[in-house]
Image 1 (spheres, rainbow, N blue to C red):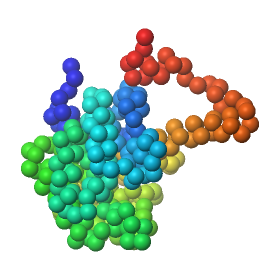
Image 2: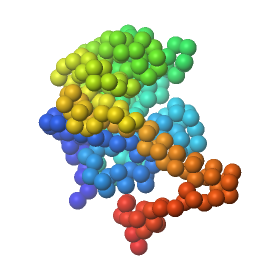
Image 3: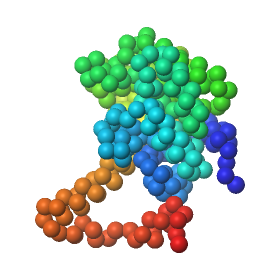
Image 4: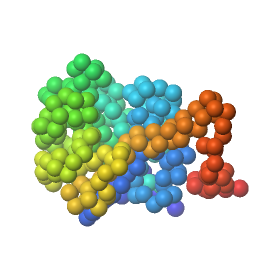
Length: 275
């Protein structure tokens, strides 16, 4: 029986309360969502980069309407809970973030993240007071909905080279007080950095991005990480295969990269479409 949205949300919350650490990979379209679900992962998440690449746009290059449509489709595509990479809420102020968050809840997600990136490389982070106000607006929208949707607070201080780990820790501590359910600072890599984020999080679960070879799930679990996501890495892996094969065909007239491909039957079987 297909689970209801409420059942998915309840399951997602339970995953964050259960012992251990879980992996939440990031599909970039309906086919990849169904394939990842077939592998037994307990939850999925969208990726702003993968979503944009599939639309032929750079990361951050789609509007709220497009993002909500994509999120709604992925939320309905599988029986798994879906966490949305909701960027900075697609709004310039807290009032707009409230409305965006309300719409995101309505799209059927079990959770979503709000980041503190402004989109301006010269001034990449919202002032802390404004970032907190925006996060509180998202929290208020969830509370007003009466739904069990988890709010992930995401600091871009490391990723955007805007203060690094110390600034990320300062912000995450403030976001925890502002009502976040999960804390996330993309690009923490070393055990020491991850341990610092876990320390600041206290009783809140921590999400760690893994988009490169490195620490294993077991090692991250031992550090106190609750949730692992892959961000745009799987989309980049798919694009890497396409780009290598297509360039070899275009530049050399060779088709060697097409050897060993999965059959159509295997692909269709991955999302229950065998005929």
